[in-house]
Length: 278
Image (cartoon, rainbow, N blue to C red; front, side):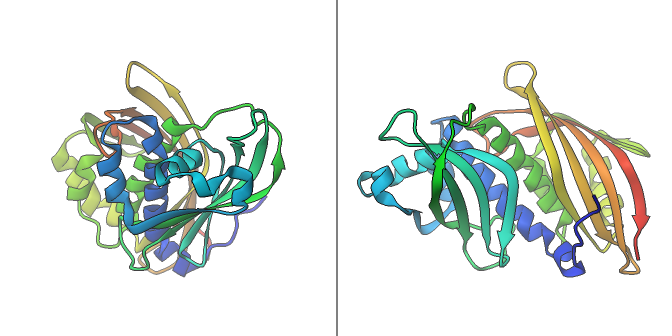
């Protein structure tokens, strides 16, 4: 199966989509811990934030507080495929348990709407749940560790794709043992990282990283390994479209008191090399 065609404007605007995905996954991951949840939620949510649930008679939503509605959303078993509609609303399908009827489940669509101003950390204005029918037991529970790891991944790619990228915002993502290895070299100090940001990361006019798959596993206490397969698209200095496919193996340390898990090691390999397609 060939790649889905992506316009040059979508490549240029990808960092804003990555920013929304960062916020959505960071919000979902708050269900992992009660530590600093209120303060972190305030950073992620816009003033007047609300959660709207359709078919409220089925879930008894009218009697649920905002915190209870938040817990309900975070308990959903979500699919991997997210989509951005009209550049402003992120949607994902999932399955949720009926809180009023043990053993019953609903198919749902969750929509995240954001404040309209473009931003690298756009506040979430509203979350909507639409019931789309009865569902079978998904046989799994919400993967909040995965959401937390994905929040770091999307934050990283927001900063990499940002046309005005600088090294400083990356510091909240880099662990004490941070090392990045790729096909033609490695980065193991902050000075080398600065050179990478202003050099290799800035060697194209724009880039986009679409996630094909993700898997993760626990390592030692509060450490995880995740493997991301990414379709890379970019615009070279002649504004020609380029493609590649990469495999990222990242090791994270996870301190729940921090906004994001920190990357300790990153290994990047190419499954398909860079090529110009026009």
